[in-house]
Length: 229
Image (cartoon, rainbow, N blue to C red; front, side, top):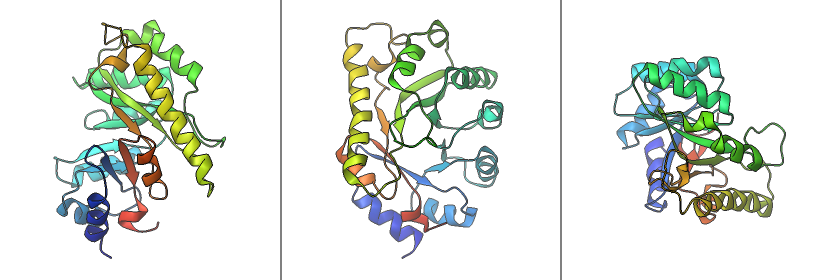
């Protein structure tokens, strides 16, 4: 099947409230343009240089999502144009994003990455680190970032029960944040009560349907659209 056919098949089966990020890392611009011409406007990359190169070559109504692990010293290269950074896993990184957003006179949307997998290769905050970050004075002073929600990556395994448990764990953290701050009036200090705190990014080509069942509102799909790498 063609890229356009793959894309349309997936979109037809996605609930309306779920956003599709087409993971285009390592794929040539010609492949991305096929998806673009089929109506896709959100693309996910995991290397800043590759994303910057594609940004320069492609239409400017595209939303570029950085879905990979981000090094602080590379933030400046995507700060002028990135739409959403999925993998924010430290206060230091968030501070650098805020700094570079200010330089570009922007507010950059971010997701906080939560460690839910049973794999040491995965990145993310644990619940204690998440609480510490959100309650820190440094976080409360940042005016050029906006936290849209949480992101997580499940263990790479065939065990569907384990994947489901990890997805539900992320959903429970998201829900508890909202419940805990339900009475809060200061949305800068209590980000989870803000109207824009509504995204749970979890699920990829192999498990996105299960992720949606578990509460995902944003899925990152690559090989099912573009084919294997």
